[in-house]
Image 1: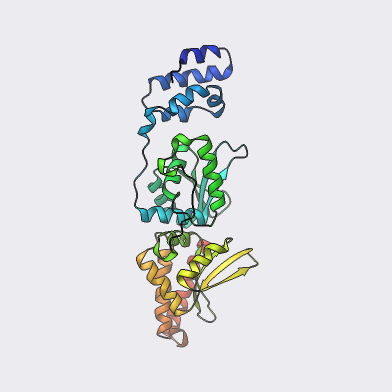
Image 2: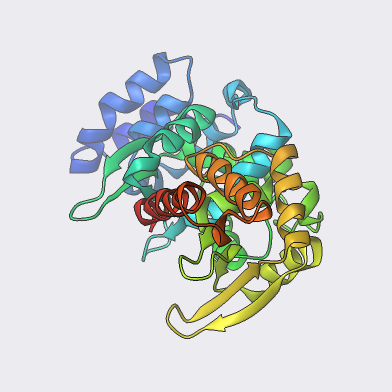
Length: 318
């Protein structure tokens, strides 16, 4: 397909869009990087000069698109944390998409880890909240996000991601990796055999303890009961409906079930502040096994202080 760039420009001579577009198109003609065109062009210009953009988007220059290389374990972990605390946005006009990952302020280093994996994004402090947010909005960043998690997703927020992917595929298909051009499917891998569960726990999981009875438990909350059913199948435990959060809560509290989780985290370690909470939780399990909670004096004080430390850590995450 041959495009006469001069004719496209001069046939639209005089309109404001042409005036703004001319410098960009001249730069595109000189540039070896086709992404310059995509970053500079607004959607209105893309519509007006459709043939030109179609010509460049099908150009061999797009074979230069590269994606960061990370391990499969990291892609599983990213999918988990993204489906937990991430938000997939589609604009009202359905012309573009955006992704946000929001965490508590003390977890900002975890956001920097995610940003480093994606090699893109910007981190901001959420106004009037004790939270920080990673924002991905340009097409290169979104294409990298899709490339990493497209084949690792569980059922939670799956419909939102599907709408997110459909919109991006419709308006920017040239940015998608070849392996991501087919519709997404739910990953059915067992929850105890993937890093996905670790990522999801980083977002929506908690180590809990009762001050009164010293009862230890691991909990995960979700609006989607199906994902908790999959977790229960792997780690046992129980699921109940919570009226306060209008969602479901998974709980593991027996010694046998807690040990399943401890063994899992040994194989698939937590990457954020909750790894410190895990150390405290394991120590509480040891103290309880030695019956420190039934003692008086120094041992009971150590047990109570450790409970307070764990609960303070939780308050920062809530």
